Image (cartoon, rainbow, N blue to C red; front, side):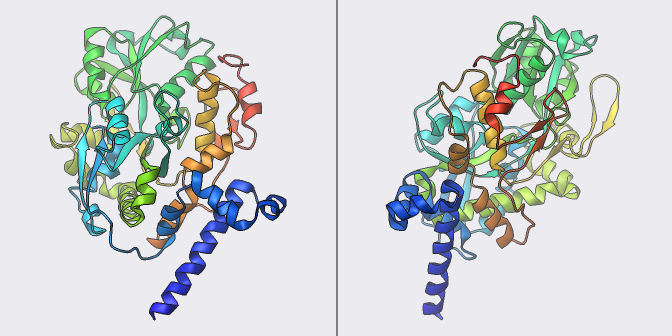
Length: 425
């Protein structure tokens, strides 16, 4: 039986290598014939967590190389699967003694992870891309095997701005976003530019840690923010602001936060990494089921996690909420949870990093997306746990705002060229 198992795993490893070759080289036989398959695999291993990919593909993992793990998180509902996996036993289910460690800002999350003070981490989905490219920080290769939440953000304005009717009225406003390399920043810029305003000239945008957003609204330091929950709902709860627009009404199903790790951790401890990814995917699918949302709210609301009133967390997770304008709304997909990291999402993020001048020079859109967003590996994990997984790594995405309603990830340069307001030509 042992011999048969080794043969099966060897065959699976070969299949994984071939799958990755196709993803990166597009099945270019001339290239493989020129350098040889062995050289191609060695080259791939330099940029891709090959050992971790093989471990994730295995139906059964070996014992984790490290059981006691620290996972960084910011206290926002986007991190729901990462947080709930501790009190609700998902980490233990996969043989891990994982502790979630709260951080106050995204810069702190980044630094804890880069300095190896955390083993894996909650990140904004643009962060593993930017850090892997050395943009805004030292260059450290990261992998992102799972998205945490989709939707779940909002533009919140101070109560004094209830007369605002459209984003064109934002001229002169001071806005907060959680971090430069965030979906919040790129979605806010998208909305403002589509309204005809230049986000670098007609408004002010500054990074504000999510837990400080409501206080800054109250103090008059901000006119609004595109931020994560529960702080949109908390502004309503404290009568300091109102929800102007949900992010799902910009890009339905957009990614926001994610589960990420340094590439060296994924490669150096593939069984521990594989167990972590399974725990996260399992918790994410549990959170996707709306009948579990109230139970989850009670689990993550306490002081050591979100430190929020349960009713505020419930309003976000159930989608039954007061918008601050006297309206009681029922929006079940206000936030949702889907682990699959479509590489087309990464390509869109990279177009916006290029659009606003965060990336200088040429961009290897597909290469970076493949290296960081581990779609193939997430699919294998989802299937191994009995969940339905998308068959494609990239799809077109539909926007509800703007002239370019459809994003085709195979044509990023053409898409970028279609924006009249941008920092790059």
